[in-house]
Length: 115
Length: 111
Figure 1 (tube, chains in turn red, brown):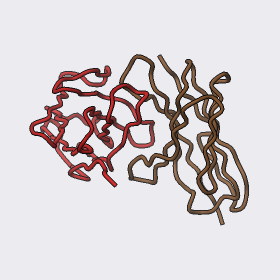
Figure 2 (cartoon, rainbow over the protein chains, first blue to last red):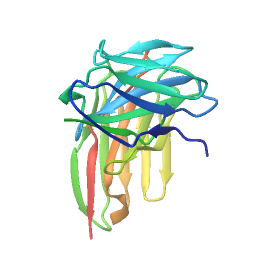
Figure 3 (cartoon, each protein chain N blue to C red):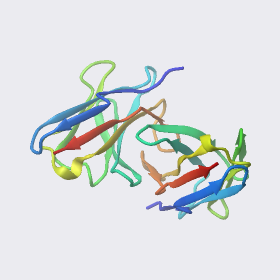
């Protein structure tokens, strides 16, 4: 069964460093998303991406964040200068069709720890 | 802005018992999702409820959706230890790409 994959599974970084989290969405999906979950809290939407551009972003997704689809398979989330509060689990998701009414399939997550 | 409220947030129950987790949401929606999350793991899709009155069952879990009451329930029948996990409900934010999640219910099933 097709699934969303993410790498790395765990990333440890120093405050102020740049990190890139990678995702490979399901191959025939066209809509991609990033969510995050701070430890013990609920899952929060960060950004959605379609046709090589951001379609929607939350207030969390500030100028420190960027997303990119560098090739036909990968979808990345970059945090330019990490802060302690960026420590969280980051989930990538993809869907065949757009809009929140279409089921989104989640990857296994990347746990980011900022020291 | 859609708000999704789950209760209880913590649930400790004994094996063999039944219980229900409730998910209330604030704006009209005819779709609701339930996910399971094991510690440190991803969100596993359990149920997609697509219309008013929808009921789905998988093993010891049964989910239902009442769009008029803006309520979804996840019923656990004869709980077993393997069901211990955190359960999230999520609803679509109308006119948006995002799913809005509840805070989750951490279920612990004790032998």
